[in-house]
Length: 475
Image (cartoon, rainbow, N blue to C red; front, side):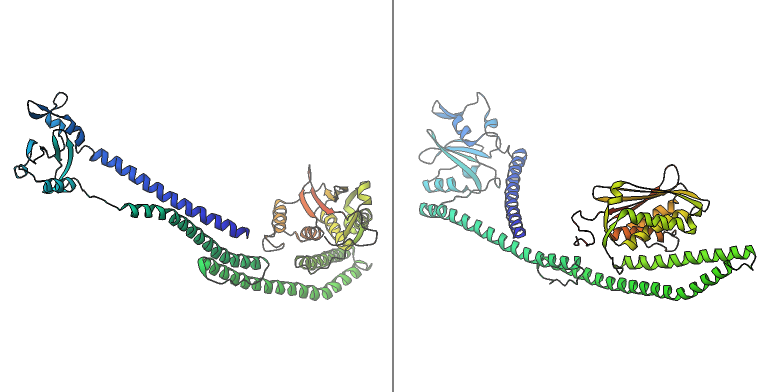
C-alpha cells in the first residue's frame, strides 16, 4: 500500500505540474505576443481616438485641432481619416475624408457604423459636446465584434463554474488514482517475478498493461538464467564426477609407487644414490597424494558437499598438535619453528570442525617448508580478542610471488578457479581460504617484512554460554 500511495501522489503531482506548466506556457505566450505586437504593430496610431477627440475645440464657430503641441498630421498619424457629425448627421469637420464618405448620415447609418464598419473602414466613435467624433482606420487593420449575454445566462454560467471545477478536480484525482492502481498492479507482478528470480526460481510474468515490455524482458531474462543454471549445474556435476573419478583411479597406482619407493629407499643392497632417488620418488608421491586430497576437499567445499562436523574445540591444543605434527614430519628438517599462543588464545573455544582446521594449518606450515628448500624460520602466533581468534603463520623465506597474491585475490572474489591454465599453483592456499570461510572467518595473505610470506587466519569464537562438549545452536 505504501507503493500505491506513492504512485497516487506522483500521479496527482504530475497532473498538477502539467496543468501549471500549461497555464504558465499560455501566460508566457500571451505576454510574449503582446510584447511582439507592441514592438512591431503597436505604433499603428500615435494617439488614442479619445485624445484626438479631446484635442478638437470650437473657434469662431468652426472646429479646429489644438496644434499648440502637435500638428493635425501628428495627431492623426496612423489613422486613415476622421470626421465630426452634428446632431442632424451632417459632416461639420473632416480630415482626409474619402469623397464617397463625405455626405449626410441618417441615424440608422450612424448606429450601423458605430457598431460595425463604414464601407469596410473600421471606425471608432465618440460623443462630444460639439457632436459625434468618428475616426477611421485603414481597411483590414482592425477586427470588430460585439458580444452580448443575458444576465440570467451569465449568472447561471458563473454559478455552474464552481461545481464544474470541483467535478473536474474529482475526475482528475479519480483518473490519477485508477492509473496509479493499474500501474501498481503491473509493477507488483514484475516485483514478484524479480523476487522469484532472486530466489533462483523460474519467473513468468503476465505481459499486459504499461509494464508489458518490461515483463517480456523479465521473462526472457528468467529463461536465459534458467538455461544458464542448467548448463552450470551440468558442468559442475561433470567436474565433480571427473575429480572423484581421477582421485579414485589414481589412488591404487600411487599407493604402489609409494610402497615400492619406500622399499627401495630402505633396501641396503642398493647404492646410496639409488636410495636417494627412491626417497625423492616417495616424497613426490606423498606430494601428489596431498594434492589429490586437497583437490577433492576444495571441490566438496566449493559445492557445500563437505559436511562440517562442528564441535567445541580449544584453540591452544589444536594449534599445538598442528605444529607438533609439522615438526615430526620430514619437511620440518630445514625449518625452525617459533610457536607462541597468548593466554586468551590458549583458552579460546571454537565451534569448528577440528579436522578441517588442522588441515588448514597443516597446509600453511607445509607451504612455508616446500617453497623454501634452502630452509627458513617459521613463526606461529595466536591472539584472541573481540570474539575472534587470529592465527598468523609467517616465514622469512622467499615470500609469495606477485602472481600468487593476484591469483589468491581473484579466487577469493569468486572470479576464477585455482589451477586453471596459466595460473600459479595455489590449491593449498585456496583450500585454507575455503576452510576459513566455511567457519565464518577469513584468510589473508601478504608479504612478511622485511622478507618472507605471512598468512593470517581469523575465526569467530564460540559463544561463551555454550556448555563444554555441546554444539551451539546455528546462527
